[in-house]
Image (tube, rainbow, N blue to C red; front, side, top):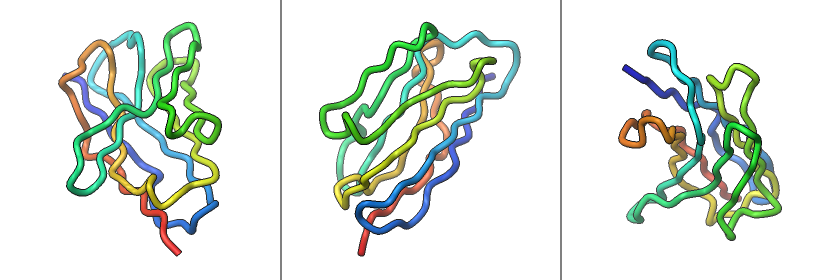
Length: 114
């Protein structure tokens, strides 16, 4: 059983930065694409970024140029470096794996406010 644990969220001022982490546990797995989603209060969950096994990265237009997705060598963690944060980035952030797209963690809250 795959489990995902997100961490690193918090309260930051506009223009600030946060680095989110996602740890994958639950046995021997070999994730393909790893991705980040976010869900703002009262909004639908939206895709943020994807990184493939070969380090190809894709971003939603709203975060491109500000966010950077990465993964570790063991492919059991995925990160999201978020810079120049805006209030509209406020959301709960979730990681997700191509292998098990229906598995979600608790998410980590990111609040951008002055």
